[in-house]
Image (cartoon, rainbow, N blue to C red):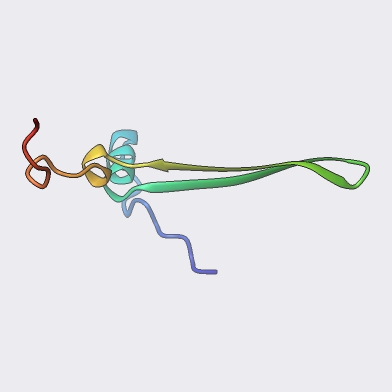
Length: 68
């Protein structure tokens, strides 16, 4: 497993700097939940969330054709 990346180089960075950095780079959160009874798995739930600025995910208006 690779080493986690350092989000902020400075120790005096504000919360706004942190959020701005996360939105520019993007963040993926993944989790799993398993609900079982008596050692038998009954429900398996996998959650994935992507957090980033919209211009990183959505196509640019110049790349799309003209609207009809």
